[in-house]
Amino acid sequence: MEDTENSSEAESIDPLQFEVDERYFENAELESYDVYPTGWTIAKEVLEDFSHRLVYFYVPFNSKLFYFWSFLVSIGVLYNAFAMVIFIFADVKSQYFWNWVFLPSPTSNYSNPTVIRLIDFVQRTQQRTTFPRLFKIVLLAVSCIVLFHWNACLYFLFSIYEGITEESQTEFGFSYYKVFEPVFPVCEAYYGNDCWYNEDIDHTLDLDDVRDSYKMDLVNYWKNKHYRWSTGNFSREYSMSVYWSALTITTCGQQPWPSTSSQNSLEICDTLIGVLVFATIIGSVGSVVTQMSQTVNEFRQMMDGIKFYMKYREVNSAIQERALGCFMYLMAHNQLDDEECILSLLPPRLQANIAANLHMETLQKVEIFAMCDSRFMHEVVLLVKQQVFSPNDYLCRKNEKAKEMFIIKQGKLRVIDDDTGKELHELNEGATFGELSIVHVKGNLLGTRRCVSLQSVGYSDVYVLYRDDVSRLLLEFPQEYRTVIANARNMLHSRGLLETTELGEMCDPEDHEEAEDMILEEMSVVEQLTRLTGIIDDLNANLSEMIVSFSVGN
Image (cartoon, rainbow, N blue to C red; front, side):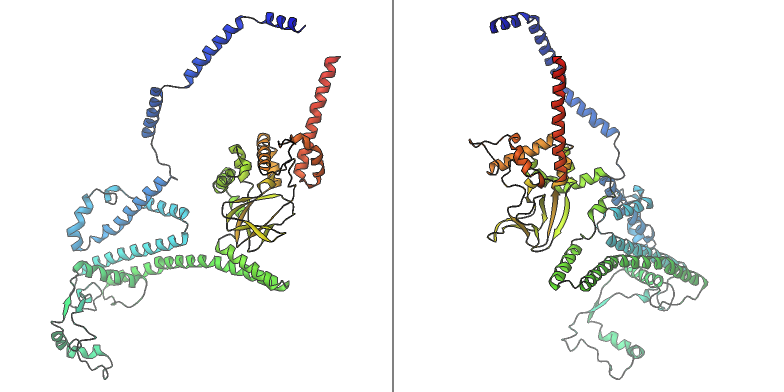
């Protein structure tokens, strides 16, 4: 009978089928040839792409290249802000004016820098910098320097207009008599006997009142005992002008009073600038200082609240010290703010990117997630939550229900055997603990309880991945669920913690239904619902098969 059936099947085979298969393979070869282009085609596509990039090249406004270019242009703006008025001084104008006009450089006036670009750079720096208060103080200092510089140049221009004198020290305008070149002695004033002019200091109330009577004797005495540091006219002119500008705008110190209408006008304008502009700058500095102390004040209020609560509730002094120490640690590491509240302001995709940057490298090293899809891993990193543990805190104890996995971000943890009290192992930054606790594996000899304890050595920042969250996520990724279970079974089998057959092979997961029923109470609600959903799906499949077979039979 079998021979006749085989012969009938052989007779039913069409010999033309083999010719069709050959044509099919020929077409497949042609298609595969078209899929993989030649080297010339690839080079042509690369050249076309490169040419398109050159033709349609642009710099986005939020790119780093645009930011650095704004920085260079801002330097040009500041350079020109100083240079365009400093040529009032004759020495500078005679040597550097034409170089400034014709020299082609990124900071010359031909680079066409604008104040708008400088303002844009300041705004972008305030958004990018991690020290916004320091940058604001630097910005205010630079603003003051530019203001003093412009006002000093205006003062010297006004002095040129009225005429510079060299004899009077009480003139309102600039005078060389107000600024002398520095003079230094060439003898040892503290050790030499001939390096000290004998003046009657004990019986003279004010030396300035009596020195005019013997100033020629002073000049003759120091004639060959000093040297003069020649600084040039520009140094004397600019230093005196900036000094006058700073004192006038800040309304500090005394200056020669004006004696003409034009001098009164200049003094009034500078006073208004000092009252309005400089008062605004000082107010900005005050706001920066207030903001810097605001965080400290809030921290003190929180500390006072915790202290009052613990004293009012009569908390043990040892616990109070631990609580305050933990609070100080959180403040020192900027962890008082809720990360979830801060990240909730960002789009979900950007939150996923930040979480992946923090945890993806560590989670990919976890053996239980080997060969899992990247989309699944990006969802897993969103489930990680941060916790802080103080010294000697237990993260988990022996015989507790295992329901989470720990990832060490900072600090050290030690694995302890409670029965002997010995330290079995020490975990450092980047290590994981309890990865088999996030899934339920049939035939696991460890059960659902911890077999060791985990304790924090010092202050530790730990990321926690809970079993319920992973179980809820695995419902959406059935293929990853099978992968994770297979990895967990292989890990347990390699450690000798999985039930095996008499030959030492892993048992089929379906052979452990009775064991699963025994630990049903230990399963989470999500895992129980998942199990019930699987049972219902199996029942529906069996019922559909029975209906189909009954219909065919009738």
